[in-house]
Length: 578
Image 1 (cartoon, helix red, strand yellow):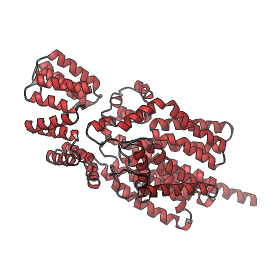
Image 2 (cartoon, helix red, strand yellow; image 1 turned 180 degrees about the vertical axis):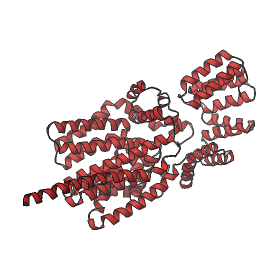
Image 3 (cartoon, one colour; image 1 turned 45 degrees about the horizontal axis):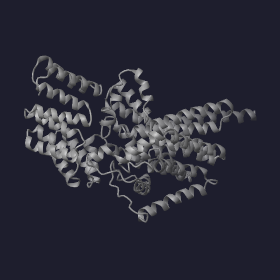
Image 4 (cartoon, helix red, strand yellow; image 1 turned 135 degrees about the horizontal axis):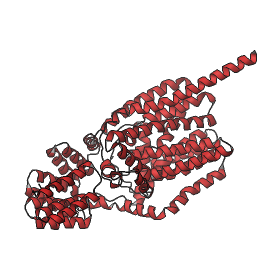
């Protein structure tokens, strides 16, 4: 009887525990979905237009047999494929892209739960296991610094990479506790997941370093040394592609041609990134306020810059803490490792036009969540109250932050208010005003941008387009010629000058302008404009040829097809094009 009584409660408690863990697993997923539910009906913003809507690879994905095309893409093929598949099944309705981002974030929160749970079972007392896992996953689910990676569709490249990144870590952890054939299966799955993480986004190059650190903390030194060889081999195998990417990124030719500043020199960029890793990223992990899609960053110009020195001391202190506590609190060491890897290693060595972008530290959020959970669960009697308060405050802040990403107007109003001395946000706000039918407000923002940077040719181009719509042809021509003078290698000013010339009934001059634009960069818009010019000249067969070229160059979108069809219809009727 005693044995029966002892066994029955054990089985019952195990069943109860399984149900308890299942419910705890579901909680961060539901919380993540609830916090980001207000982004479901947001619009496309910022780089979504160029990278998703105007991307022929995505726009022309009209059959599944084109799947193989993405395997040939050297960078972010998995991310681009996810957008192409969404487009294939749902078109370009933004709510489905936002829905994908929300779902991925929810799944990532679950992955954080299981990573934390496995680590807790290895390194923490039994009474802290579920508390630690729940705390880490909830903090990750609601942290406002993740808003850019979830509420902004293209920012989802980081959260998609994180899905495979976190999956790899979890599979490695499970594999460490398995034996025989099962261990090999888990290792193979981890390898596949790691490859997918790299194909989703290049910051996954830090993944072998994180896993190597994990093996060091578990005493597997030989495996750890082998893992460190992976990023070296990866860089060696992709050396040519990486070299071209580095050069293209550093030169930043397209934006420089448009009048924007050059990318910071590599040494200045590296030092500036070190400073911002502490004073922007780490600071906002702890105090997630004043978030900004394009913050004003002051470059570090000398090694004795006080903020740089303080940043190095703080980062050094974190590293020292991680090393010194490795035996006593290995979970803290692992948390510090994952916190520092993504923002420092991935981006400090690749000079980018924007030193700071919040979605880049989404993966680092795993480390911050683990570290915070360790603090929160040290005194279990205060865990529920503390975690509830943190989750509530951060959840409210995230919901409010999400509203900024509703559309281009709300986004760039926020950025201009926080970074008034940057020219690009004023240009982007002006474009948003144009899209909302407010040309006077747009002109005011363009003028403000030019007062900050007089060489910003896109501002002149867009002002010229507004003047053309108003039939203010003199102002239009002056603005467009100024743009062509500032950026003679950009096609846009010449395309607009060609349109202006057709309005002035000067088709030969228009043809010269559009041919100049095509020589600088062939495009759908340039070919469409050339067809219009040739039509005005009565050269209908040539116009038909240009419309055909435009159809091949443009993405397979309804609005693109409609523009071509309208011209073909008029061409068939022989009527004028307006």
